[in-house]
Image (cartoon, rainbow, N blue to C red):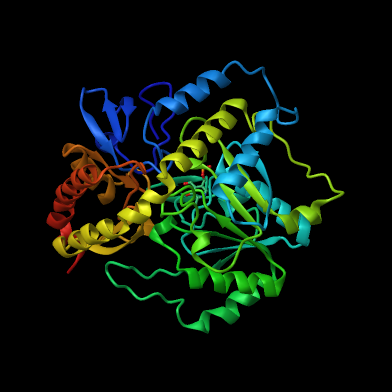
Length: 435
Ligand SMILES: Cc1ncc(COP(=O)(O)O)c(C=O)c1O
């Protein structure tokens, strides 16, 4: 860990070459300190792109609000909750209420603690390779080994002690493009999963992390096990919510409905730090007569409320939340070309406007700090030469694409050109990894 300025570095795997200095943005474009403009294909929190004029205007107006803590009544908080339910959860009549948080990490931590209190059970469950945030119980359910909150160095890892027993369920890790089989299509995983859930307060499922994209049947099977075992089911839609995969939410592709949905990232269209928990009416009834002992000063800040409301209005009006569905076929076709054109590519899967490309190379679990810059970061640096910023997830052989939902087909074409350019580097290094 080095500090060239007084700012402590927060980047996990990116070196300087893949982490340019950004000085501005507009639409899908980042403006860089060296004068270039590059497409941002890496941003899970910018559904409307950068510096959307209506988001800026909403924030400007909200800046006149007094200093408020979470406990004060402020009408726009009620209105923002009403907008979330009316716009994004239209037709979901099981929804009861919304509570706002500062981040999705915080929302996940709070909902998991609430489920522990409601059930009297301590253990929690998620699926393999999940990422749910970096704070409290959310971090415990982030079972990707790079994100434990401790220290990594060449000799080893100093991870903090665990805060909770965490059960991992098998993941539906098939791949639409490269055709890997989904191990959860056969029911033999279910008895063991049921035993784990019987011991758990909640099961938290996200729909994209670790390059794992859920099938509706997987969701429905886990939901049924959760119902049978009296375990709460939480859909973590931090990445997939608000149109990333086409339609408002990924859970809507299944028959089952969760007890809670957690939100973040796109929620406020990048205009302010915001997360949320959406609770079912059943849970709300269960909470009647109780007081939820949780508080934080800046939750539901007026600027966040204004950004959320403006985002929902724009997304509904301009049908932004639907765009990824229309682009899914195009993305599938272009990703198939990526898979067949590059021997370095081992797995490709995705939905709508979120896609993961995994590379042959060192095992994703084994990355340690200060070894050479990981392969994925070097591919990102090369794609950047071609004018596009692609993302890595902190795993050394995994890349993902998540451009703003306003991206045009022409801009997507440029993204694929740059991805091909970047992957040439991985192709050249392939002999180092595959024998
Ligand atoms: C599925 C999922 N849940 C929760 C989080 C945590 O979000 P935040 O970092 O905004 O707290 C993330 C962040 O990447 C995520 O991908």
